[in-house]
Image 1: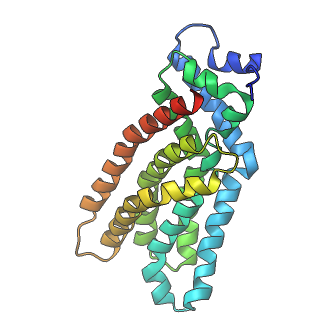
Image 2: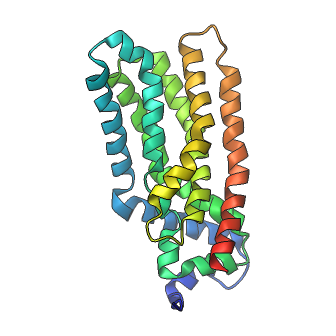
Image 3: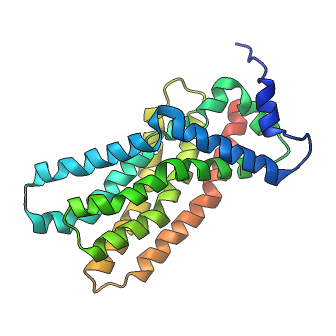
Length: 244
């Protein structure tokens, strides 16, 4: 089926002045994606509600033992945040695919890797950052100590962007599929396991010891930086193959 040409307003978004003003283009794209992420499907609200649901059902399954809840709390909060981050990843490039602006993203003079990086940043701020902000409240719900709550929030702040960068690859691979949400989750979840492992390990090290907190926390930072480079590059390659 022949694609319809993009709307002129979309050209104005991605080619605002007809010149290579990367800063202006990326700022416009960031603000546009931030608005779309908040509006589409409830955005941050759905993620927080899902996060709350996952964490809230755990006490019903393991019982009212406060010591047990306090011990497994960091892992449960991290698992809930990981699953909540998977929501909406399939829509990372879907709007551009539907309205035809995906071709403009690929053809513009700005490097596609930078474009994907900006889209990931906007998506994380709209969907991932609210989960980090909500994690202390859910930590209280799990009877976690102040140290555990602070460590969990800090590790989520550092580690959750890696999930978005990994998800960008899955979203780019599944962008041409009509129902690619499940495929994105299947692709992303195994790759996100190391982030989960070191995030939980750093939290437990801060709470229990005697393992030091810094080594797993630095590894978590390294994973985020690694996927910040690899994820957008792999997603850009997948998008170019999709639009060919």
